[in-house]
Length: 71
Image (cartoon, rainbow, N blue to C red; front, side):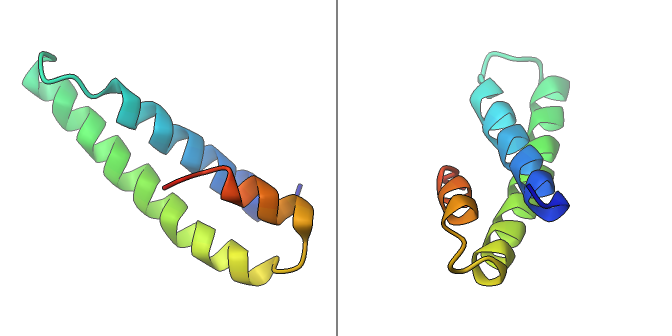
């Protein structure tokens, strides 16, 4: 896999991970950490996803990998 696709995949997985950690019963400082991580990783993944869709249009393997992430 190209490095830009690997970078997207890592950001997308981190986005999903931190999004799944949200719990209103967590301490406020932990919620803030999670919010920052979600904002950073999800924003980065969304941006990369759009760029990669255009860059690798026609590459079915990469298109399939990118489509696996709903960001």
